[in-house]
Figure 1 (cartoon, rainbow, N blue to C red):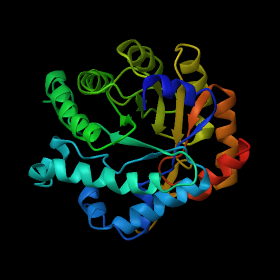
Figure 2 (figure 1 turned 90 degrees about the horizontal axis):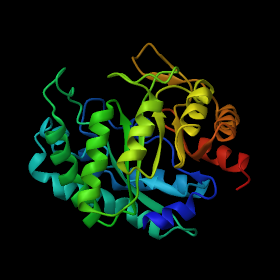
Figure 3 (figure 1 turned 45 degrees about the vertical axis):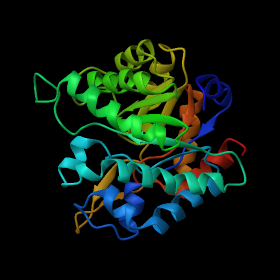
Figure 4 (figure 1 turned 180 degrees about the horizontal axis):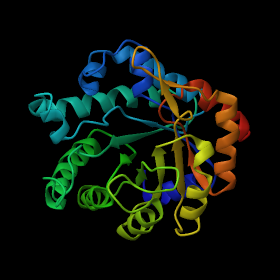
Length: 293
């Protein structure tokens, strides 16, 4: 996908997919394992989930490469399998997208290193840049249509991802930070500052994901929309979870309510919408119905 094709796609509301991790755990993925390694061995689980998202109306699905950077894989002793893991996981999503009865794009999913950025921690801009450059290069060669840096918690690290992408490919890149209801970012700064900086760096769409429920993000989305000229993304959780007796996060917002609140986010300026933790294909189907798909 070229950046121009992305601009044309976003002339209308674009529907992303919903959660991956919470659905994998519901399908039997144990806590504490490397998600990418588990998905590698459970092709049917991820493909059934992504097929259901496409049937629900998703225009873009996220390849399950979220933690496929060298830093994260090293924590599981899998750094030497990095290229194999990323290429294979993209191929799983590519197969499903290419078999769909409507045009579906595959986004390469990347995220934070999990390390604190300097001076608070050991991760430098240069190290983050190299980490993203390596993973994005592999993902581009694997046949993805665009890049998405999601669940980001640091503006500088996200800028490193955008800068790295521009050196290895010309694919569109979307960026979403995870924020509190007031728009503040875990490591400092806020969603509006991040959005402005990322647009200036060359991001093709900006916004928020994960964080809180859609009912708490209206003012954040409106403020981002008022400060950027590129599409705004909203991919919220299914409300705020509570922890049950077994230590599991339980999301209480039902699909029709989620869709109704996403409609409010669209009215506030979001042009690219989907779901994060706690959402399922049912949630995407309700959003699709709400926007008249």
